[in-house]
Length: 80
Image (cartoon, rainbow, N blue to C red; front, side, top):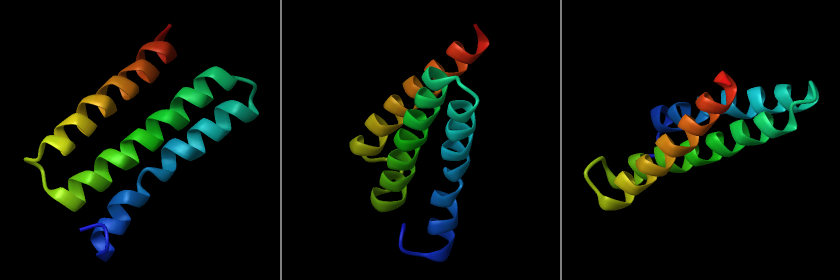
């Protein structure tokens, strides 16, 4: 669950999205930085719902779909 130490460490891994988005923004790439920040927020929500509800719930599957879409947008934008 998100209240256990393991769950909190798992959620804390999303910090790297925030750090990367901030780094891109500081270096002048506001669009890519913003997309990275958005992907980090969506990833946090997905991981939180995964911990809270379990992997086979429709809420978790919807969050996963949105997470894939946002992360894919960042990857495609970064590759262009």
